[in-house]
Image 1 (cartoon, protein in one colour):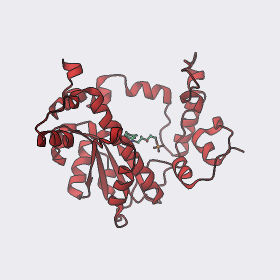
Image 2 (tube, protein in one colour):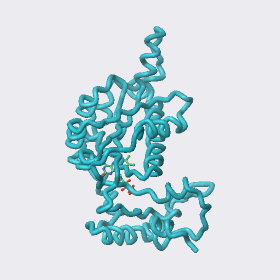
Image 3 (spheres, protein in one colour):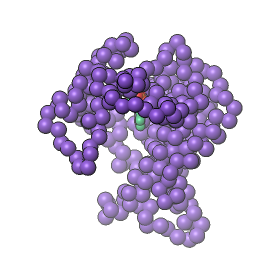
Image 4 (cartoon, helix red, strand yellow):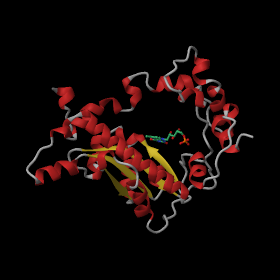
Length: 275
Ligand SMILES: Cc1cc2nc3c(=O)[nH]c(=O)nc-3n(C[C@H](O)[C@H](O)[C@H](O)COP(=O)(O)O)c2cc1C
């Protein structure tokens, strides 16, 4: 029998497999983003616990090219809430963690040694820092959820990155990749497990298989997500239309089409792109 958590994740297209009974796996499979929080304080040492989980993630060449800013001040969270597109959960929850791609530490270490590492100025190095920050953040998410807390990533942090940098006082060679709201979920507004594409859409075996039709591409996912939205009392969307709409024009990127310019303003520059 298909485990109920897989039915929640995949609907009728859930793989008919049994799962090992492991608390860590169970926690990951039950993930849901929380957007309604109580204002209650977090348990003691939550920040240090989450950062220890984050720093336990793998990191490219052990370079550790990320940092995180823990924002607890109400005034600063309110400012950030405005900058990321009026997202109220930043003001409501007690903690916002802003995850940074941070090449400034290595730049400073190089300066202290009288050296300027040319490798800082290649796109792959920035990508590496973003990957490191992302792996670290997701470890913190898994830890927070295991502690009974709720989280919400905030990609909107890149809508106006220069203004976010000003609020956070970040130096050159530091870029906010995303925020993460952390708090106690409001039990009156529980979040549900959101369905995902069938595994056949994302899992290729040995080589990439290009589907011939939209039906082969995503199966019945549009219907599964529409049913989920209906059950949540949210407006139904046609997912395959929505994802194309979301990327239809530069304006639909909510300011993020300026990424390259914003990176240059933050002191990044790429020898392999700019020459
Ligand atoms: C990098 C990233 C950025 C996100 N940014 C936002 C955001 O700005 N606001 C928001 O409400 N949710 C945000 N989300 C949450 C996604 O909307 C959510 O993960 C997705 O709809 C799937 O739902 P689930 O996490 O409940 O399974 C973000 C998620 C990721 C991974």
